[in-house]
Length: 438
Image (cartoon, rainbow, N blue to C red):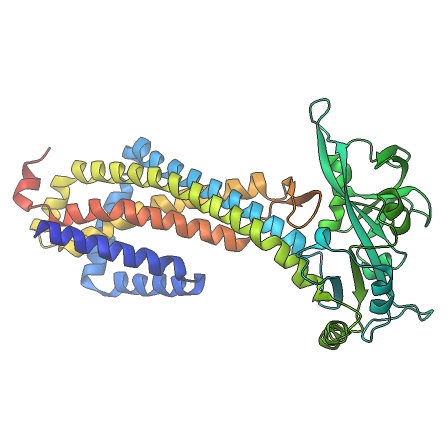
């Protein structure tokens, strides 16, 4: 019978945890309100409140053991939120790079700009298709661009350490396509010249990218003439004239992609249909919002899996810490619990009281861990090799309210597991046996 009972408790635990992780915040709020009403209006609820009050009042006497639970859970939540914030920051940087009214055209079957090649004839056809917006001079707002890689010395690295940076050759319409890109130091490059403007993210990562300095790209020496800020993935790039970049890297008149500003987001379907239906072309067309969002999916999943894996390993340790602490607390209060049972308190109030005490400690640990993650990591800058590109992508950790809520749910789940078995033991402990325990 004991085995079957433990098996039932384990099944209830698994189901409860599964339901718990699916609950949104407002459903949890409803549960809290219902539970509070039960404690206020029912006899067993009031008994549970009384027993909980006694247990909480003794926490000062068990400060050391209680701190183990709080610190352990705080560590789990802090690490989990920090790792998930890394993935969130990476994804948001790429999501902010695109929009619904800007299209990217690649060679058919290309997964990214790096693997795409478009001929000059194809680019001329693309720029004449309907749906593209035109400037005041009647010129289509489209830019045939080329993406290549360059190795530059990294800041704060050992002598000889180099990193990969993405160099983008752009046409003069690139600025109209991306109005968020602003020159913040120096000036824009002159067409036809070996001049570069660098993103502020690239400038933070690599040596020698200040205006007035010279860098070697390919076999040529280039002058850095300006720094730009965009607040997205372009911050990690270096820009130059597309024709000069293509000549330096022996790409001729070909380009890797065409970016086009559409008349509005609704023009995308017609624009895509015109390009894919043109027998002169074999291209893939998408909005830049979809394109860059897809580029973030793989890395974001890896970061999330890594965060959950590390968090789960740490959570196991925190659960054992909570179990040890609460079993010790139940053993120390065995006589007290037995006395309550003897004078009419049922098992449910005892279970609820022990669980509430553990959940309170878990909530405190979750709040501490979330606060530390927000204070330390929110806005922290990091970089990694971006999917579908040739260079490092600089991004900032993003500790969002959703991640903090997820961390709190993990904390309360750990508290629930850590308190359930001690609570059940307290409720099932025979009164006569408990009264004889020290």
